[in-house]
Length: 76
Image 1: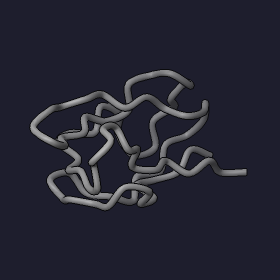
Image 2 (image 1 turned 30 degrees about the vertical axis):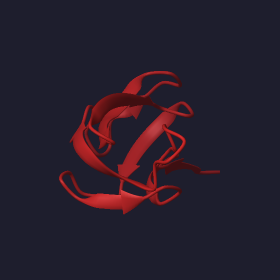
Image 3 (image 1 turned 60 degrees about the vertical axis):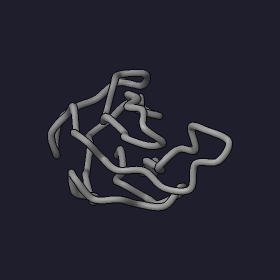
């Protein structure tokens, strides 16, 4: 079963964030806890870790802004 990669809420007032860079490519094998993408929000940049181990399927584009809770991809 696929695990959704969601845009996390990092700060109390955070409503949206921008994907600065995917640190793994679509189709890569990733492990839980591995840095997955850089998230720019509220004047800070944070690395977001993979929530599971498996094959990465990216559905969100670099440079785009998304609301908290948006599905950015899956790990199968």
